[in-house]
Length: 241
Image (cartoon, rainbow, N blue to C red; front, side, top):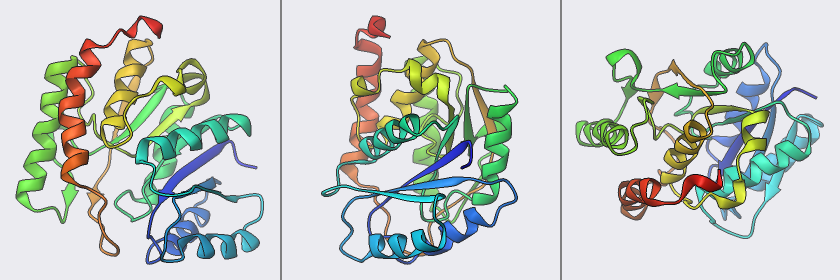
C-alpha cells in the first residue's frame, strides 16, 4: 500500500481511463488510485474493474448512482482515503490534462513540507502554461483567477486548479460535510477554507494540456457557480472552521 492516493472522478472516460491508470502505475514513485465512477454509460467502470484484477491492492473503484458533481466526487474520495489511512491525497483528472509525470513533484513538495496543500499551477511565476485552449477560454480562465484573488484576498495564483495534493492533517481539520459547492467553485472553496484554517498552499508550475479524447464536462452552469460562488465565500460565516 502506498502512502499516497490519487483520486480520479470519471464520467464517460473509456478513451482515457486505461491509459491514465497504466501511466500512473508506471511511475517510479508508487501511488494507489481510487476511481470515483458516476455510472458512465460508455463502460468506463467495466474497464476499471478489469484492471483491478491486474493491479490488486493498488486500484480501487467507488461507483455512484449518477453524475453528482465534481466536488462531491472528490469529497467521497477524501473520506475513503482518510478511512483507509492515506497520508496524502491528490486530485487528478482522467483525461491527461494533468500530466501524471507531475504527480511525484506534487507529492514531494507536500511530503517535504513546502506546503500543507500543493497546487499544480498553470499561472505561477507570471506565466500562462496551457496547451490547446482557444484564446477566449484561456483569457476567461486567467482573469477568473485574478478575480478570485481580488474578492477572496487569497494569494493563490491558480485558485481554480484541479491538480492538487492534500496532506492528511488538512483534510482531517476541514469539515468536509460543510463544503457547499459541487462544480468548479469547489476548487476555490477548498483553497479558501485551507487558507482560513491557517495552512500553507504551495504552487508547483505545470503545463496543462486540454483533453484530446473524450468530451469536456465544462458548462455555463458550472462557470456561473464558480463566478457567483466567490461572493458567497466572503459572505458566509467561516467561524465554524
